[in-house]
Image (cartoon, rainbow, N blue to C red; front, side):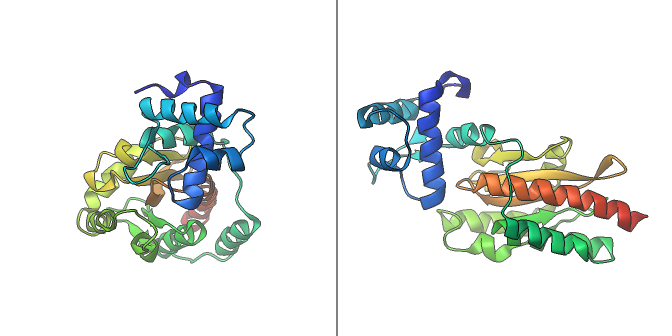
Length: 250
């Protein structure tokens, strides 16, 4: 498979267009759709050739029943790495987050429990939060995980629920391994070491107390995730949560 930096600007634009369209529609994307929806300044034949090349390079795959293509984990990785460092949230999402932290619960555990539901509300995916020093996580948005349209295979949701409910220590270990970074971390599909998360994407960020790691929050969704929105939400909530922990801990 090719490294992301070797595909060139034109193929990169085509790949971003395919990923964007697939995230939006959930359907395989054909060259015709790319031509109609994106002004890439190249001919339909060039786009067809570029999509075929991207498939050979491992960035796209072609389902047997469709003439269109879908992103692979490598294709999503290229897309995520090209996103703005701090994508923006909608005004409505900002209001929901501000309202929550404007009147937060007075107890730390309850604040973390409700934060999981806040994240699931603003992203429409599942979410987990780890209280400071705790050996458990709070799960928010179970209905989002279970929704018919969330994962392409029902087996994915079943295995994910089993992992969250019966193997909490494995989830905690994964979150801790990703929480030593200063910023938001994204793990896509097979980048996740846990077998139950091989068709799942994680967006993870630490929150801090007096500059030191206090705990972790994460959004859990399909690899066909609205990454920009999820990254923005996790980043914004982790920052507000750090401030809240400072306040509640005195």
